[in-house]
Image (cartoon, rainbow, N blue to C red; front, side):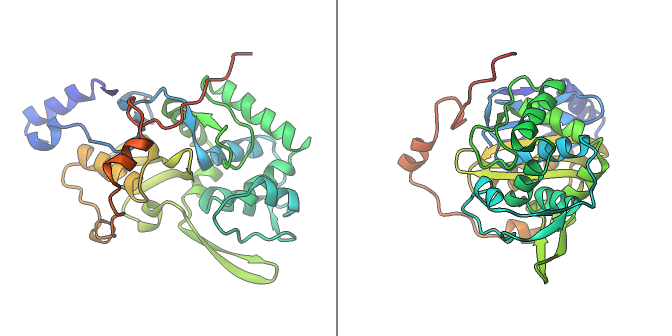
Length: 313
């Protein structure tokens, strides 16, 4: 269900004053993501919500929490960590991994790779190298979620490959808002690209968020995510029309839908903004047959896997 706040009244005032064209102001964005939230990062005011309370798998959005727990521990960022077979197993995913067993980087570099390039083995190594090991790390993740009043959220591992890592758009807005207070998370998650020396070779990595790479947005924090159970996800803190916003988009179907939704939000709030032609020109996925689409969707607005909220302790 879509909800609009008193922002609609502000928009109406802008129309009356002639600042915003009526055609653009009257329509809320038609977002394709199954769950979404737009929040003022300074005041916490919700400008738009859609299925924002549904608890769903969040894929690699998990890595924001992984970074927060790592930084909260005050561990040396220059400490070398070596990828092990345990990290390979914990970070197992279909995408090709470029951090082989035996690769050694610093904790800071693993944080960069987890946040910028969404490297699962980097996130797994951070959890394994935590004092007390992986179990202690996961406990710290859930304790942090409790501290941030993310009542519907639950974490079972640090990479996001497990569909049991669940949260809601509302909870993730709280997570992003809190993460913005960590300068390194803001810096690392918005690096467009970086090269690393891995086992004697220079290897290039890029940011998984095309909006960061494109340079057309003023983005202060970013993270993407994807597993089949979660669909394509995106969270950002970005400046839109001089206003600092938190944008959460969950379960987007199609490779470019989450980017399209972000651009639709910006067009709604920033009259005159047009997405880059190059992005708009990218080929669209072949449309699915109505039967195939229907099989993926539920009557409740296509939240494909709603998880049970954790039981209060």
